[in-house]
Image 1 (tube, one colour):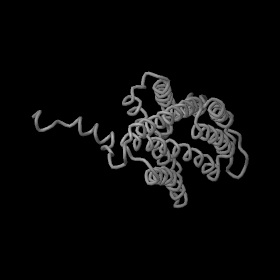
Image 2: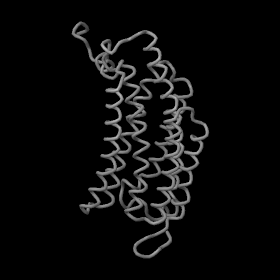
Image 3: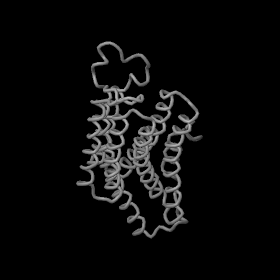
Length: 259
Protein backbone atom coordinates (compact mmCIF):
# COMPACT_ATOMS: atom_id res chain seq x y z
CA UNK A 1 0.00 0.00 0.00
CA UNK A 2 1.52 3.31 -1.11
CA UNK A 3 -0.25 6.36 0.45
CA UNK A 4 -1.09 9.04 -2.12
CA UNK A 5 -2.74 11.67 0.06
CA UNK A 6 -6.42 12.65 0.40
CA UNK A 7 -7.26 9.12 1.60
CA UNK A 8 -6.03 7.60 -1.69
CA UNK A 9 -3.59 4.70 -1.85
CA UNK A 10 -1.89 2.65 -4.54
CA UNK A 11 -2.29 -1.11 -4.02
CA UNK A 12 0.79 -2.37 -5.83
CA UNK A 13 0.09 -6.10 -6.30
CA UNK A 14 -3.64 -5.62 -6.89
CA UNK A 15 -3.19 -2.81 -9.42
CA UNK A 16 -0.43 -4.54 -11.38
CA UNK A 17 -2.25 -7.88 -11.48
CA UNK A 18 -5.21 -6.17 -13.17
CA UNK A 19 -3.28 -6.58 -16.43
CA UNK A 20 -4.36 -10.22 -16.33
CA UNK A 21 -7.89 -9.16 -17.34
CA UNK A 22 -6.48 -7.26 -20.30
CA UNK A 23 -4.58 -10.37 -21.34
CA UNK A 24 -7.73 -12.50 -20.93
CA UNK A 25 -9.72 -10.10 -23.10
CA UNK A 26 -7.01 -9.73 -25.74
CA UNK A 27 -6.87 -13.50 -26.19
CA UNK A 28 -10.61 -13.55 -26.85
CA UNK A 29 -10.35 -10.67 -29.31
CA UNK A 30 -7.78 -12.74 -31.17
CA UNK A 31 -9.36 -16.21 -30.94
CA UNK A 32 -13.15 -15.85 -30.63
CA UNK A 33 -15.28 -16.53 -33.69
CA UNK A 34 -18.59 -14.76 -33.06
CA UNK A 35 -18.99 -10.98 -32.65
CA UNK A 36 -20.52 -11.06 -29.15
CA UNK A 37 -17.57 -13.09 -27.82
CA UNK A 38 -15.11 -10.63 -29.34
CA UNK A 39 -17.10 -7.74 -27.85
CA UNK A 40 -16.95 -9.57 -24.52
CA UNK A 41 -13.16 -9.76 -24.94
CA UNK A 42 -12.98 -6.02 -25.54
CA UNK A 43 -15.02 -5.35 -22.42
CA UNK A 44 -12.69 -7.63 -20.44
CA UNK A 45 -9.85 -5.34 -21.47
CA UNK A 46 -11.94 -2.47 -20.08
CA UNK A 47 -12.41 -4.48 -16.88
CA UNK A 48 -8.62 -4.62 -16.55
CA UNK A 49 -8.36 -0.85 -17.00
CA UNK A 50 -11.15 -0.27 -14.49
CA UNK A 51 -9.64 -2.66 -11.97
CA UNK A 52 -6.26 -0.92 -12.27
CA UNK A 53 -7.98 2.44 -11.78
CA UNK A 54 -9.70 1.24 -8.61
CA UNK A 55 -6.67 -0.38 -7.02
CA UNK A 56 -4.40 2.49 -8.06
CA UNK A 57 -6.53 5.07 -6.22
CA UNK A 58 -8.89 3.15 -3.85
CA UNK A 59 -11.55 5.79 -4.57
CA UNK A 60 -15.31 5.27 -4.78
CA UNK A 61 -15.45 6.84 -8.24
CA UNK A 62 -12.93 4.33 -9.54
CA UNK A 63 -15.00 1.57 -7.93
CA UNK A 64 -17.83 2.52 -10.29
CA UNK A 65 -15.36 2.61 -13.20
CA UNK A 66 -14.37 -0.91 -12.18
CA UNK A 67 -17.83 -2.46 -11.92
CA UNK A 68 -19.53 -0.92 -14.98
CA UNK A 69 -17.61 -2.95 -17.61
CA UNK A 70 -18.01 -6.03 -15.42
CA UNK A 71 -21.78 -5.53 -15.45
CA UNK A 72 -21.67 -5.16 -19.24
CA UNK A 73 -19.86 -8.48 -19.65
CA UNK A 74 -22.41 -10.14 -17.36
CA UNK A 75 -25.24 -8.63 -19.42
CA UNK A 76 -23.73 -10.15 -22.56
CA UNK A 77 -23.72 -13.56 -20.93
CA UNK A 78 -27.32 -13.19 -19.72
CA UNK A 79 -28.37 -12.09 -23.21
CA UNK A 80 -26.93 -15.20 -24.85
CA UNK A 81 -28.12 -17.55 -22.11
CA UNK A 82 -31.67 -16.27 -22.52
CA UNK A 83 -31.29 -16.54 -26.29
CA UNK A 84 -30.37 -20.18 -25.88
CA UNK A 85 -33.42 -20.91 -23.74
CA UNK A 86 -35.64 -19.11 -26.23
CA UNK A 87 -34.17 -21.04 -29.16
CA UNK A 88 -34.68 -24.35 -27.36
CA UNK A 89 -38.32 -23.45 -26.60
CA UNK A 90 -39.01 -22.23 -30.15
CA UNK A 91 -39.37 -18.55 -29.23
CA UNK A 92 -38.01 -16.55 -32.15
CA UNK A 93 -38.49 -13.21 -33.81
CA UNK A 94 -38.40 -9.52 -32.81
CA UNK A 95 -40.41 -10.00 -29.60
CA UNK A 96 -38.03 -12.67 -28.30
CA UNK A 97 -35.05 -10.44 -29.11
CA UNK A 98 -36.67 -7.49 -27.32
CA UNK A 99 -37.28 -9.64 -24.25
CA UNK A 100 -33.68 -10.76 -23.95
CA UNK A 101 -32.39 -7.22 -24.51
CA UNK A 102 -34.66 -5.87 -21.77
CA UNK A 103 -33.75 -8.63 -19.31
CA UNK A 104 -29.98 -8.38 -19.86
CA UNK A 105 -29.88 -4.57 -19.78
CA UNK A 106 -32.20 -4.48 -16.75
CA UNK A 107 -29.95 -6.92 -14.88
CA UNK A 108 -26.89 -4.78 -15.60
CA UNK A 109 -28.76 -1.64 -14.52
CA UNK A 110 -29.73 -3.18 -11.19
CA UNK A 111 -26.22 -4.57 -10.63
CA UNK A 112 -24.62 -1.13 -11.10
CA UNK A 113 -27.13 1.25 -9.58
CA UNK A 114 -27.87 -0.75 -6.44
CA UNK A 115 -24.28 -0.36 -5.11
CA UNK A 116 -24.29 3.28 -6.21
CA UNK A 117 -27.47 4.03 -4.26
CA UNK A 118 -26.07 2.19 -1.24
CA UNK A 119 -22.90 4.31 -1.36
CA UNK A 120 -24.92 7.52 -1.62
CA UNK A 121 -26.91 6.58 1.47
CA UNK A 122 -23.76 6.00 3.50
CA UNK A 123 -23.90 2.22 3.82
CA UNK A 124 -20.56 0.65 4.69
CA UNK A 125 -18.17 -0.30 1.91
CA UNK A 126 -18.14 -3.88 3.15
CA UNK A 127 -21.90 -4.23 2.63
CA UNK A 128 -21.77 -2.45 -0.74
CA UNK A 129 -19.10 -4.84 -1.96
CA UNK A 130 -21.09 -7.83 -0.70
CA UNK A 131 -24.25 -6.76 -2.53
CA UNK A 132 -22.31 -6.09 -5.73
CA UNK A 133 -20.56 -9.47 -5.51
CA UNK A 134 -23.92 -11.21 -5.04
CA UNK A 135 -25.58 -9.44 -7.99
CA UNK A 136 -22.65 -9.93 -10.37
CA UNK A 137 -22.06 -13.50 -9.22
CA UNK A 138 -25.74 -14.35 -9.70
CA UNK A 139 -25.60 -13.22 -13.33
CA UNK A 140 -22.50 -15.30 -13.97
CA UNK A 141 -23.98 -18.32 -12.20
CA UNK A 142 -27.16 -18.09 -14.28
CA UNK A 143 -25.06 -18.09 -17.46
CA UNK A 144 -23.10 -21.10 -16.27
CA UNK A 145 -26.21 -23.10 -15.35
CA UNK A 146 -27.96 -22.40 -18.65
CA UNK A 147 -24.80 -23.21 -20.63
CA UNK A 148 -24.41 -26.49 -18.73
CA UNK A 149 -28.05 -27.47 -19.37
CA UNK A 150 -27.92 -26.64 -23.07
CA UNK A 151 -24.56 -28.34 -23.62
CA UNK A 152 -25.90 -31.52 -22.03
CA UNK A 153 -29.24 -31.26 -23.83
CA UNK A 154 -27.54 -30.82 -27.21
CA UNK A 155 -24.94 -33.52 -26.55
CA UNK A 156 -21.82 -31.32 -26.71
CA UNK A 157 -20.89 -31.22 -23.03
CA UNK A 158 -17.83 -33.43 -23.55
CA UNK A 159 -16.51 -31.06 -26.20
CA UNK A 160 -14.59 -27.80 -25.92
CA UNK A 161 -17.53 -25.89 -24.44
CA UNK A 162 -17.88 -28.31 -21.54
CA UNK A 163 -14.15 -28.27 -20.82
CA UNK A 164 -14.08 -24.47 -20.82
CA UNK A 165 -17.06 -24.39 -18.48
CA UNK A 166 -15.46 -26.82 -16.03
CA UNK A 167 -12.20 -24.85 -16.03
CA UNK A 168 -14.16 -21.66 -15.38
CA UNK A 169 -15.98 -23.24 -12.42
CA UNK A 170 -12.79 -24.68 -10.93
CA UNK A 171 -10.92 -21.37 -11.18
CA UNK A 172 -13.75 -19.28 -9.74
CA UNK A 173 -13.92 -21.62 -6.76
CA UNK A 174 -10.16 -21.26 -6.25
CA UNK A 175 -10.55 -17.50 -6.58
CA UNK A 176 -13.30 -17.41 -3.99
CA UNK A 177 -10.97 -19.25 -1.65
CA UNK A 178 -8.56 -16.33 -2.03
CA UNK A 179 -11.27 -13.81 -1.11
CA UNK A 180 -12.56 -15.45 2.06
CA UNK A 181 -11.08 -12.54 4.04
CA UNK A 182 -13.58 -10.26 2.27
CA UNK A 183 -16.45 -12.18 3.86
CA UNK A 184 -14.87 -12.54 7.30
CA UNK A 185 -13.77 -9.12 8.62
CA UNK A 186 -10.58 -9.33 10.66
CA UNK A 187 -9.53 -12.65 9.12
CA UNK A 188 -6.65 -11.12 7.16
CA UNK A 189 -4.27 -10.44 10.05
CA UNK A 190 -0.76 -11.41 11.05
CA UNK A 191 1.28 -13.30 8.48
CA UNK A 192 -1.68 -13.40 6.07
CA UNK A 193 -1.30 -9.67 5.42
CA UNK A 194 1.96 -10.41 3.56
CA UNK A 195 0.16 -12.56 0.96
CA UNK A 196 -1.44 -10.64 -1.93
CA UNK A 197 -4.62 -12.71 -1.85
CA UNK A 198 -6.59 -10.28 -3.99
CA UNK A 199 -3.93 -10.50 -6.68
CA UNK A 200 -4.45 -14.27 -6.69
CA UNK A 201 -8.17 -13.58 -7.05
CA UNK A 202 -7.33 -11.54 -10.15
CA UNK A 203 -5.34 -14.48 -11.51
CA UNK A 204 -8.06 -17.09 -11.04
CA UNK A 205 -10.97 -14.82 -11.98
CA UNK A 206 -9.21 -13.68 -15.16
CA UNK A 207 -8.88 -17.32 -16.21
CA UNK A 208 -12.57 -17.82 -15.43
CA UNK A 209 -13.48 -14.70 -17.40
CA UNK A 210 -11.45 -15.90 -20.38
CA UNK A 211 -13.01 -19.37 -20.33
CA UNK A 212 -16.50 -17.83 -19.94
CA UNK A 213 -15.77 -15.86 -23.09
CA UNK A 214 -15.01 -19.10 -24.92
CA UNK A 215 -18.17 -20.68 -23.46
CA UNK A 216 -20.05 -17.64 -24.77
CA UNK A 217 -18.46 -18.24 -28.18
CA UNK A 218 -19.50 -21.91 -28.18
CA UNK A 219 -22.99 -21.17 -26.87
CA UNK A 220 -23.53 -18.53 -29.56
CA UNK A 221 -22.64 -20.99 -32.30
CA UNK A 222 -24.84 -23.62 -30.67
CA UNK A 223 -27.82 -21.25 -30.54
CA UNK A 224 -27.29 -20.36 -34.19
CA UNK A 225 -27.31 -24.04 -35.16
CA UNK A 226 -30.44 -24.64 -33.05
CA UNK A 227 -32.28 -21.85 -34.84
CA UNK A 228 -31.10 -23.07 -38.25
CA UNK A 229 -32.29 -26.56 -37.38
CA UNK A 230 -35.67 -25.22 -36.31
CA UNK A 231 -35.94 -23.28 -39.55
CA UNK A 232 -35.08 -26.37 -41.59
CA UNK A 233 -37.81 -28.28 -39.81
CA UNK A 234 -40.21 -25.46 -40.70
CA UNK A 235 -41.25 -24.93 -37.09
CA UNK A 236 -43.71 -22.07 -36.75
CA UNK A 237 -44.01 -19.79 -33.70
CA UNK A 238 -47.31 -21.43 -32.83
CA UNK A 239 -45.42 -24.67 -32.21
CA UNK A 240 -43.56 -23.27 -29.21
CA UNK A 241 -42.55 -25.84 -26.62
CA UNK A 242 -42.58 -25.53 -22.89
CA UNK A 243 -39.26 -23.92 -21.80
CA UNK A 244 -36.49 -26.45 -21.13
CA UNK A 245 -36.03 -25.61 -17.45
CA UNK A 246 -39.76 -25.96 -16.79
CA UNK A 247 -39.78 -29.33 -18.56
CA UNK A 248 -36.82 -30.48 -16.45
CA UNK A 249 -38.61 -29.46 -13.25
CA UNK A 250 -41.79 -31.21 -14.42
CA UNK A 251 -39.90 -34.40 -15.27
CA UNK A 252 -38.11 -34.35 -11.91
CA UNK A 253 -41.37 -34.24 -9.96
CA UNK A 254 -43.11 -37.54 -9.22
CA UNK A 255 -46.22 -38.09 -11.31
CA UNK A 256 -49.54 -39.26 -9.91
CA UNK A 257 -49.10 -42.58 -11.72
CA UNK A 258 -45.82 -43.34 -9.94
CA UNK A 259 -47.24 -42.81 -6.46
